[in-house]
Length: 247
Picture (tube, rainbow, N blue to C red):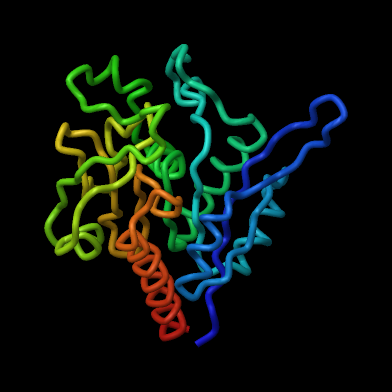
């Protein structure tokens, strides 16, 4: 079987002084895809929809990476003082890319801010700062401990249940924003014991799409977390196998 091509959206840093603008992707994302048999393809923040369409025509699935915060003003909310927004060029591109991926029903996996992007572009919304919006929640961000972890409560029969159902269940946690209202067509399939949403999955039969708030690609991830990427590639291959049968 031909290895699937997985698009990975790139972060963007504008020019500053003598430093040119550049795009970059943390190695954990593309190494995780390579490790399960996919071929990662970095997608820089194109500035036309035509270029986005041309890229998606050649890809088999898309991974939305994490990063800085989404700008809540784009969704009709006020800017909270703790929000550190992504560069506008990246966010504009990511939102357009997410909508086009949804229209095409392409397999997609969102991580961290990538899951939040999936949720808001499909009609959900976010808590802007967990300590204020959910004051009884556990700590989800420890600046002094990048390996900070917590347990999960899983929805039976979900992708998350297939990955973690029989394993030791502790995932990393490094976020201050979180999913509030889940987008139509999606369901919560993992929560922290305090109720904070940690994974969502599409309930639509024609779209393989899911996201995790935690980061299975980082050095602080466990060996079990790799199974999430394996499940993603299985879904990508099943989708394209079904498309070939229809064709």
